[in-house]
Amino acid sequence: MNTKNLLLILIVSTVVLVARFLPHWPNFSPLASVILFSGVYAKNKKYIILPFIALLFSDFFIGFYHWGIMLSVYGSFAIIALFGLTLKKHKNIVNTISASLGSALFFFCLTNLAVWFFGNWYTHDFAGLTLSYTLAIPFFKNTIMSNLLYTGLLFGSYETLRHLIKNPSLLFNK
Image 1: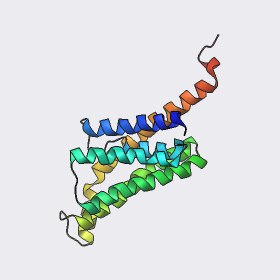
Image 2: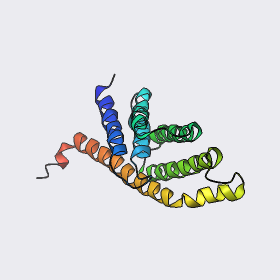
Image 3: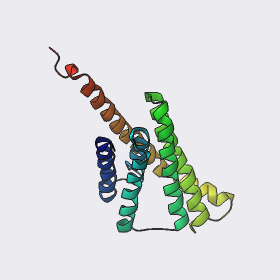
């Protein structure tokens, strides 16, 4: 077992847990970025479950909602973890940004489809589906902004630290 890697994933999962209880804009969350990060950097694939445990734990306190909508949220995050596993093999700045934006788009499409399908806020016709997506655009903007911010912070910090640890002379320029 790689305890340093487990500790890293535990720390970022704790960030998710704490962030869920702090005041924030709707859909402005580090969760998708942490799951993407876990997919890329978890040396043991089992560690990817840790952010999901943090999400489930926080849902016990924040409250559960319709099972179909919850399934779409958790399912979206599972797909984002798969994005991370794919990104691991092709990691560069462009692919990381693309995965971050793709994660936001996938989450938006699947969860709003579920809200329309399982919820009772919209008529169950094309007009209701269109309205569901239209009214979700402000939330989508927040998702995009948070994904880009947190992905940049997580991946950028990790790669910078990794590079500095491998090349400590960069810290002490004479």
